[in-house]
Amino acid sequence: MAQYPNLAQAIAWASSQLQSSSESAKLDAEVLLLHILQKNRSYLFAWPEAELNAEQYQLFESLIARRKAGEPVAHLTGEREFWSLPLYVNNSTLIPRPDTETLVEHALTLPLPTDARVVDLGTGTGAIVLALASEQPDWQLIGVDYSHDAVALAEKNRQRLGFEHVQIRQSDWFSALSGQRFDLIVSNPPYICETDEHLTQGDVRFEPLSALVAPEEGYADIRHITEQALQYLAPDGYLMFEHGYQQAAGVQQIFAQMNYRNILTIKDMAGCDRVTMAQKPQ
Image (cartoon, rainbow, N blue to C red; front, side, top):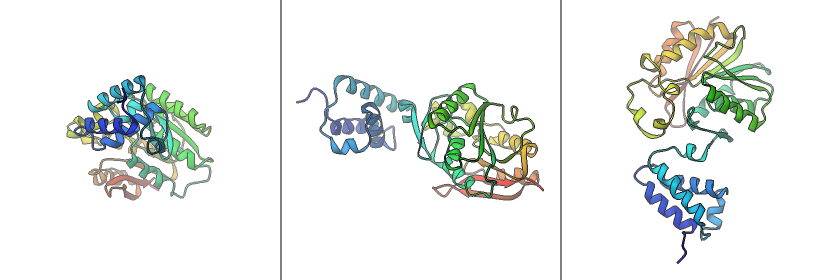
């Protein structure tokens, strides 16, 4: 009998370990094992009987124990794919989520100028602004964040992807953007209510509260940005938010109170209200 398990045995063991703590136990096990091996997914199917060495198995055991304790897979691997782009992640900001691709997808359908000026407020990893940059090489894009650690992470991702038409800046929302006008302002701001029970569940336990929680039942930052954006939007410019699945009516009301027009809510892949957008008042 081998001293250490082969790939198939290691995945079976890890899957059983994670069964009670993860909804995707086998996938988590596979991702973590491939991270250690530095191989792609096809390797698991091609070489299921390949044996781990001592160092690989000890590292795998350690990562599985941390995942079992709730640490997000993205924090354990240091990476997460978003819009088919590989992004570095860490605990200084939110882990990019597939739902946010809804915002990117619809931003790309807007009738913007060829050289549109776009800003992503609260850019975090840079996921949104870098996804837009990957599709629109002629746009002029800025990603800003209040957190210096997030700014450093987003800039690291920008450099990794080589997008020279993107700037990453430290800014408290619009504070570093004085006098500028944008054709599109996008944001995935903090929007969770301080008393939301989901804050004690899943990956969000390991993410910074400052990137998740907002006063006024989660609407404070959305309201602030919507008001301030009036000074920063170009004529006919658009403002788009990602928000919670129960917040569409509240966000629409904020837009309406400030006379924005063409207010529209878009559903995500699961059919939940996820993005609300509007145009600057005439």
